[in-house]
Structures are given as structure tokens and as C-alpha cells.
Length: 132
Image 1 (cartoon, helix red, strand yellow):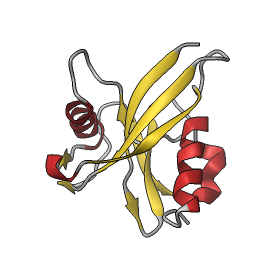
Image 2 (image 1 turned 45 degrees about the vertical axis):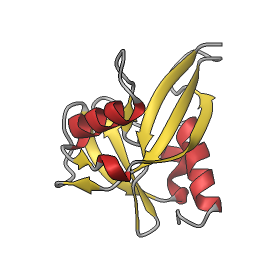
Image 3 (image 1 turned 30 degrees about the vertical axis):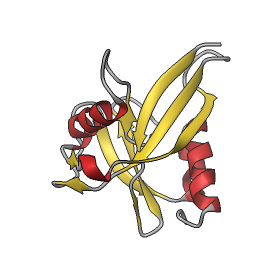
């Protein structure tokens, strides 16, 4: 089984989660991405979020939420994505950049618009009362 290792930034506001849609895609994804060779989770997450959303995560506030694994969206059966999720405060103004076409706030009712691994994250947040 092949595993795609990714990092994600969970940002909640008013029981909604920040999600992004990349150019040319139809599904929304929790922002984040893959680490480059030699990068720590923190360094990669800060870089990816800066590239995608133009904001700066505050390193001292980065906190691990959990790992979630599921079938990778738009990949052959058996290819899994492992999403290592973190929360963090940020500085700046959220704006779509790089490959991001759209930034939205989603609730658990939007499950049909997200990937299988994001559905697991939504379930986790919903069960904790953090996501409407």
C-alpha cells in the first residue's frame, strides 16, 4: 500500500472549518500540503500555508490535533493519504494564492464536497462539538 504523507492546518471559526479548492478541482480540501526533503512538520506547514493563503502561522501556537488516514482522492484504489493535522494562530489576511482558486468555510453538512480523509477529520471535529 502506498501512503501519501501530508500536513493540514485546521482552522475553525463559528463552528465552520476553513477549506480551499485548487484550480481545476471540484472538491474542497483542508489547506496544507507535502513536506520537502528535510523539512519538519512545522516548517512545511508554515511554508505551505504561506504559499496557499498568504498568511504567517505563529510557530509558538502550532499544536498537533491528530493523524487521519483514508483512500486518496483522485488516486488508484489502495493509495492512502495520511494527514497529520495541526492548529495554529496566524498573522495577516487570508487570501487565495498559488494553486488555490477559492477559500470557503464549511460545516459537516458539506461532506459531499470534500475528500475521504477530510470526511474523517470532519467526523472527529463534529463529534467533539467543534464543527456544526
